[in-house]
Amino acid sequence: MTQRLAPRWLEAETFDCRDAFVETLVALASEDPRIVGVVNDSVGSSKLDAFRTAFPDRLVNVGIAEQDMVGMAAGLAGGGRIPFVSGAACFLTARAMEQIKVDAAYSRNNLKLCGMSPGVAYGELGPTHHSIEDVAWLRALDQLVVVVPADPVETAAAIRWAAAYEGPVFVRVSRTPVPQVHPADHTFTPGRATVLHEGDDVTLVSNGTVLWRALAAAEQLAAEGIGARVLSMASVSPLDTAAVVQAARETGALVTAEESVPRGGLGGAVAEAVVAHHPVPVRMLGVDAFAPTGSAGYLLDRYGMSPEGIARAARELLHRRRS
Image (cartoon, rainbow, N blue to C red):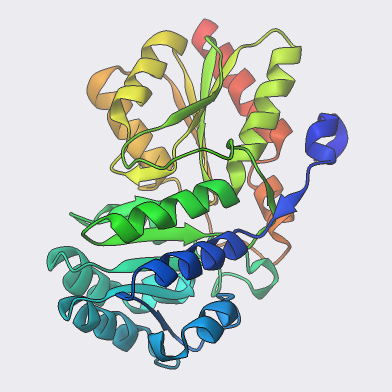
């Protein structure tokens, strides 16, 4: 993967976004006594030790009982608290899907669901621990905001926004090390994408741990005379449909890349917008099968999301469009 990477990506400092999550949560809780944490025996893996130390009476550990965790958090929300529900994304979503649907989304309770170590972050533990379906599952629910931040800056911004928002939210919090791609003053707004790289030949739409790879791909393509626009799409639901349609009109082809199943995920959302408003060729990259064991980096490369893999998909799409 590193063969054609620019030095700035090879040398960039990387971050575990869970650190930004807990630092922001502690700061918010210091200002708002309504904020509480609810976990499923995952204080360590959620990196909530600092929160527990600062607020020992505001962290509820329900044990390995994800359905109870979401239900209890709904009760806390009904009592005027602002619960941040934290657990491994694979277990939080798969085991507690009914509670997320009914107690969070349908009931519009003020729950903040924080899916830790999403995608293929638990790479070596295999498909039972990969959380690649969560975005597609949750995007199907009405009234639930689904957010996939790309770096520590955007993670902190999303958590700050979620704390102030009155309603149910799901935020992916990555453990896979990533470089910072957004400026320090970046703010999160639901339904709004950010252009991180300009281009008029093709658009790369990405989020989460794959976004920096899309940026590296755009730089590779620029060196070949291909202008690739990069859309940072942290807000999967609601989607910035206007930005997608504008990109379709102005660049004529889109590649989506995500650390999840593209069917119903970011790829599906983008394709739906394109088909409805301005049909153009779309190539969807993602983890579209039960992935084998292996490191997160290896698995993303395997499924075509190395910088070169994303650049290759863009070249193929351009060739198809021009032929």
